[in-house]
Length: 270
Ligand SMILES: NC(=O)C1=CN([C@@H]2O[C@H](COP(=O)(O)OP(=O)(O)OC[C@H]3O[C@@H](n4cnc5c(N)ncnc54)[C@H](OP(=O)(O)O)[C@@H]3O)[C@@H](O)[C@H]2O)C=CC1
Ligand SMILES: O=C(O)[C@@H]1CCC=N1
Image (cartoon, rainbow, N blue to C red; front, side, top):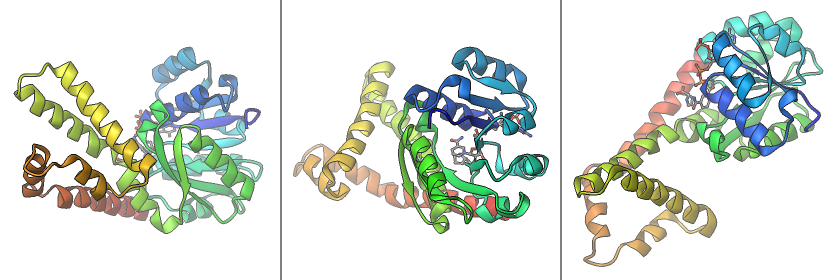
């Protein structure tokens, strides 16, 4: 993988998180990473920080890359694809991380036979803890899928899923960090209200979420069983659990994932 040139079209929040993550993971040399964006000052910052190649001209990065990671907003995708069409030849692999946009959109808009893989990562790529869903397009080869799995496994956990589930991936793990950050903030607020300083409260709240997530992943136990291990009869935890159930926490989180998934489907129709 390290000898392949990876080019990012769009170096915003997710593009820059991914390029930092793959460089940190050592799967690609900084000089083999390129990025294009319309905003030059940020490109210059990334160049100085990471030692990558940058350009405000997408075509320069497209021509000079073996693997392209398309990280522009779904709303700007149409014009970006139209401009890149003739430069994305069959030697290149296109990986798109745009929410909602189906593989058929790329396959129809680009040259016949273009190799495309659709990925939905998340912002935790910044700290090598992304959760990514991956779906290969009809022209993608087994090596293309392997390359995508390698790139996204280097910045966290990556799983192959049918394309029909990519909107659900977007609603669950793509958007999910934004559902959990307020949980951490609100739990810390509770401790601040009880008199704890903000810094200690945030540290303990974030570590609690990290520890709970690790227990689910590493023990393989059902979350309900793990909850029961914390909940002493007539103890403190069951009081807190009762407060959350009164507030409708389960429906709230289910609805958050469902609404975000529905929005992903809408974005794909544009
Ligand atoms: N943020 C997240 O957590 C996640 C995002 N995604 C997906 O990643 C993609 C990018 O999202 P995100 O990083 O949040 O968005 P950003 O707006 O931060 O990044 C997109 C970047 O592309 C630039 N841009 C706009 N037009 C062009 C163009 N014609 N050519 C090159 N660059 C251009 C934008 O510049 P300017 O701002 O000046 O327009 C911006 O810097 C989206 O498709 C989103 O669905 C997927 C998973 C998670
Ligand atoms: O909010 C969004 O549309 C993007 C996709 C997933 C996370 N952020």
